[in-house]
Image (cartoon, rainbow, N blue to C red; front, side, top):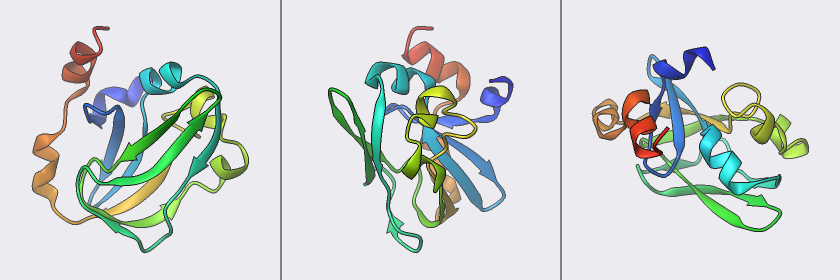
Length: 126
């Protein structure tokens, strides 16, 4: 993905795309490839609030279940309804159609705890 360099990342393999005081969140290509075929996603409700690093949902693959960790504190303002019916979108396009939630950011300073594209790629040894 060409715009991946504009994203921020967590060590738990979530990505964050900031747009003003809102952010779109998903899991990385590395994470989806490690999980394998995704068959179900448990999503929070719009209006739910989470602190940074708090579990906000789960992803179920054929052989495992993984927690989703909030990269930055915020309130859920939108969920990706498409992935409820087509969770495989996370496998096929984790940065576009496979995004998971959008949030209103509570604490902008928490972005400083996140990784750049270069730092994340060093973490996963790409």
